[in-house]
View 1 (cartoon, rainbow, N blue to C red):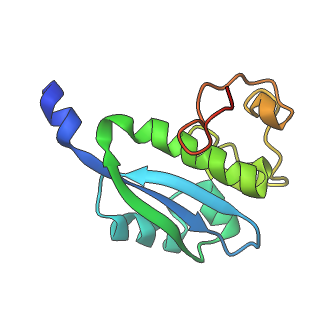
View 2 (cartoon, rainbow, N blue to C red; view 1 turned 135 degrees about the vertical axis):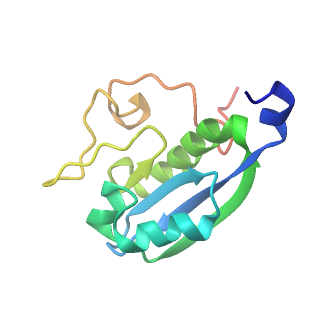
View 3 (tube, rainbow, N blue to C red; view 1 turned 90 degrees about the vertical axis):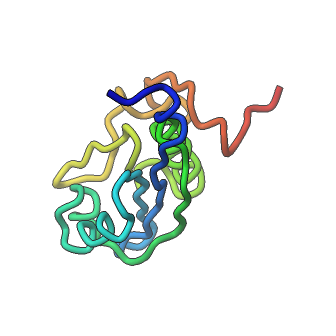
Length: 130
């Protein structure tokens, strides 16, 4: 069992990829060496999004606390979605991939983009105005 202290000191890597399809991006986290995960993306076995749109290059990567990886990955998705449009980005818990379209279903699309989902994330990289 991992103690609370170990969970706080363990790290993972947050990364974002530029896909081969112009204007498409992917964000993810891994607790394994980044080069291992990137090899999976290159081979087309890592996720459906990079299988569909390919993997061109790493946009950014950084080390983050393991206990906050979901939060940071969701924020990275929101940041990229705001820049490039939500239907052009996958990662975090927005991973739905259809064979025929890149449209995200309304039930998972945040209200900010016209969907039905109320989100309490996306604030680390773009804080709300108070």
